[in-house]
Image (cartoon, rainbow, N blue to C red; front, top):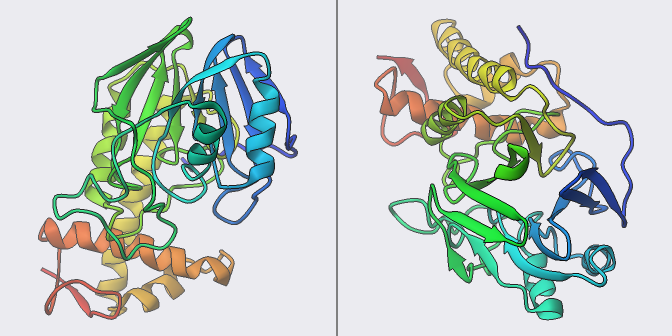
Length: 298
């Protein structure tokens, strides 16, 4: 089976769209190859509300969130992770409303060696007002969010499960329209695979990623994502067996059908797989793994 990707043809920018009795979505106008149509900021509850992933530091997007919540009070900001399309607007929203933030920690804080300062796209200015850990529960007026720690895409990635609707806000950990980029040093394929397996233990009825439409069959989707990653590792081993020994060469063989503009992201993904495979003893190289290293099977 292929990954059962789901798409949406059009989105509405700059205004709230009601997607369930408790949930509204405001789309930021920041489409790209990595954000799909843009960042979807979710508003949870009525009257006293939470915002999940305030988004990029775009004043017009913050204005749209404020307009959508006019007459209400934003009591919580829940942040899935610290990439520049997810967390920077939290500061602007806090300045406008006083709403404090909840999240795992600063960028790179999930890694034992500390912050991954070399990663592009990281929001290094964000520190949550309240740090949360796996299993913590954040409560508001008429809503309950369980914290589900899912490192891999970033080391500080946290999903939030809205118990009242059995819905997991999956950030970038699981998306419907694309597989997730896992880019070292802060991205970690071993952690990502463990986090996918964790979701199979849950009974969420629906996923709402920050980018793209809802995933209505989460178990099937996650199962196929795991199989997709295992197939990628099999492709890497096949490349090595054929004498294709460096990551750039592997990408040329493995990603023939995608836009070459996405090859840098593909190289990061293959590198993340290889780091995992070296740690598992399935692949070896001289010295520390790197993009230009030559790889062989152990």
